Image (cartoon, rainbow, N blue to C red; front, side, top):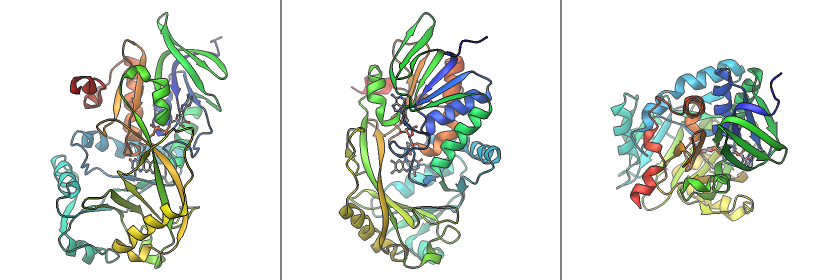
Length: 384
Ligand SMILES: Cc1cc2nc3c(=O)[nH]c(=O)nc-3n(C[C@H](O)[C@H](O)[C@H](O)COP(=O)(O)OP(=O)(O)OC[C@H]3O[C@@H](n4cnc5c(N)ncnc54)[C@H](O)[C@@H]3O)c2cc1C
């Protein structure tokens, strides 16, 4: 009989990246153990908050687009297998003020890879989506196949499916140490020791404690999310309003996600800003205060008055910033069988399906044919 503590692969942390990796390893028929210190789908890391924008016109770097094109099928498959609706393709409206690069870069990077999108003036955008108030010197981009995904449901559906395919998942188990030895990996946890042929470290904001040897200074950041009660509910639902990202001159990006029938609690339009998080210890994250939520409501009012009724709810979520804002996916230095995927810098969720595949490849073969080389950790050593 197989030893109950020996696995082909151990995955540490079941946020979106670890959950996806477990699922792909289980699909490959591997004996995989997923370890999560809290409950799957919890709200203390980075993969909660009811919705995540998915898009393919990627302003951050053109090399992400081929990876995103691989995700379409992955979301469809997860929806099919789970029997749950996870994705809403309501479109995404990007708008940039003078000097902003989001519309221009998104358009160029998307078009280079054949992503359908339309570049508009501010007036065009307001004609098409009358809910928005954009200054006349702004420009806009509409990506019709973009939209949003339900993060907790996607994580839970992946873990559930992985378990159906034979994966073992242990919740409430904290990984304390790991080391490579004797052709395998030994993992010490709050529930004892496990052995594995390979190790995937996907611990989000807790990676600095588990993967210090990576040598990449990762910074967890606290970000605030608000849900606003719409003044005009019908104008703010996903059948009439796209998701949106406003590239405000001299300020952080402001983005939002419309309401939808399957939303559950909290209701309302979800709004947050990107690029003004504050450094934080993930063990001690200050709770959200009313002034922070009111600031988000007030910022929304100027651009989208129909959405900016009263604040309904708010919470915090964590980014894990890498020094250049790009992901880090690589083998741990000096290791053969241990890999890290981290520094998703507030834009990783939409890559969940393809990251799962890349990580499963790394765990099984030590390499992947997916184009992730630009995410290597060595770039920071070269830069310093
Ligand atoms: C407010 C907000 C909005 C965002 N919006 C978007 C968006 O619209 N689109 C998009 O693509 N991305 C978005 N992101 C980014 C995206 O959500 C993250 O990049 C992604 O969720 C990172 O997932 P992860 O699996 O790396 O980390 P996490 O989800 O944090 O998962 C790490 C897991 O590891 C577990 N863990 C940690 N240490 C241990 C240990 N020692 N032992 C066992 N388990 C451990 C944790 O409990 C956690 O469950 C947003 C993020 C935030 C915070």
